[in-house]
Image (tube, rainbow, N blue to C red; front, side, top):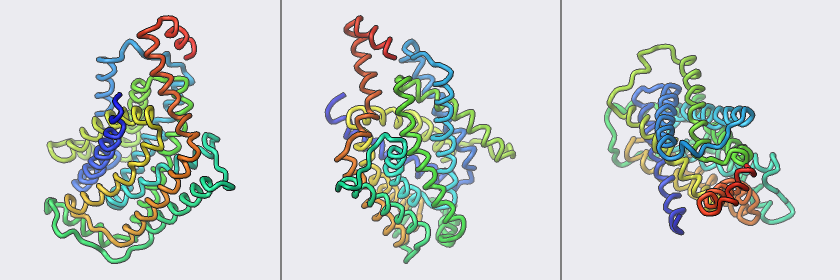
Length: 362
């Protein structure tokens, strides 16, 4: 990998995730049910990943034991089935810009679970520990501000959206601060929390099953089955399951292929070369781009409370990230499985003796 690739990949991942939020919200505005959308999205990503595995890595799969399989099953439910479904409901109840802003809490939630599971140290006697703890408090205040503080509404000067989305925009403005809006804010936060725990728990599984592509493919396959069971339990009307040639189908294919498959694979390369802290630094870029695009493409209004909450989230995020760079334990440990895998791949290609050692180590 070239020196500039991690930087380019980080920006590309952010752009992909912005497209995910906007297209998902547009699909929901068009009447697509969130649970059904998650199932179709995971199915599309699974098919793409399985084809990828068959073409490039069908002979290099690591042995999959039953304990590892159950761990991957639990991870698939926690980080994909649960997290993505909560994310979808939050999008229905609120707006794409607000959900993207709360997504800034992901590095903070990851850090909190890393501390609880002793993957990260927190020393409040040092300035780095104070910065981390203070950043977490600021982020929690930002979430509360987004949920309960409204302020003046700022309407976009123009919007490149269809007239059919105007009722949804008016509904979004009129229901700010309602029960659904507040529930959506906290569901979004719970979704980010599940992803944070998902990231931390993957460290242990990747040590025993270091094949990134196979690991991601198995997770997507299991989450597809889980998402189908959830969707069929929540949506019994078969007419809701029909896909037509509109923005809904585009959103399913985009989220399945670009996000579930490609973006996740690019993330593994960024973490391998720069660590998860570097990857998290692009999170505010997602919310900024999403807020701008949602105003001008979807016609969503934004209020002063959202701007204040976003500033608090970004400030708290960079406080935690600054403290994280002073004690890079999580970055070193989480990138270790990927680095070991790369070393073993090189050994298999160059020195048969080293390759045998790596296989025995696995």
